[in-house]
Amino acid sequence: MSSENQILGVGSRVDHKAFGDGVIIGVDVISYKVCFILHGIKNVGKENPNWDVMDAIETEEEVSFTKAEKSLIRILNTYNALNSKVELGDKWLNGTLILKPNEDNLKPKEMPIDTFFHKIVMVRDRIRVMEQRINSSKLTDEEKVNLQQYITRIYGSLTSFNVLFKYKADHFVGEKSS
Figure 1 (cartoon, rainbow, N blue to C red):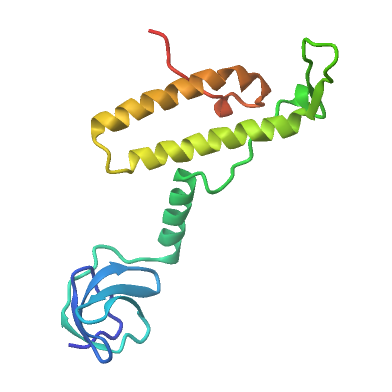
Figure 2: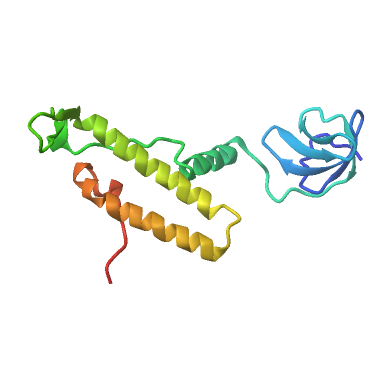
């Protein structure tokens, strides 16, 4: 059976000239991920796969660059890898954070508010990543719920910093009181 212009689905069996018998375990935009009996998992280009198709399984849907791009963006957003711009409230622009100790012999600590704000946003982003990793982990549902409750409390502790954010959509949200 020829594989020319044929998009194979997961589960299709092939006989590759160099790697021997294998099964397609993944379909990408430009290649197949194939598990070969003697050579393990290899990526094989769709253009010239150099194999005979032994048993073709139709792909459920054609993979396109647009679909792949949308999937990649969704994944990157899920793990907050596309750093979305979070804006500091206008009243704080070019401001200074001053921490003044109670003891007169100690100097106050000054820091640009935007530097402090950036650190707060990074904490929030890292908590979100941790939350996603918990959700996708192999923990039991009970363990996930327990850890989620801690994360919700962390967000609640950080709500004091919401005054710095320009948009309410960027605010920390903790536990809602009943």
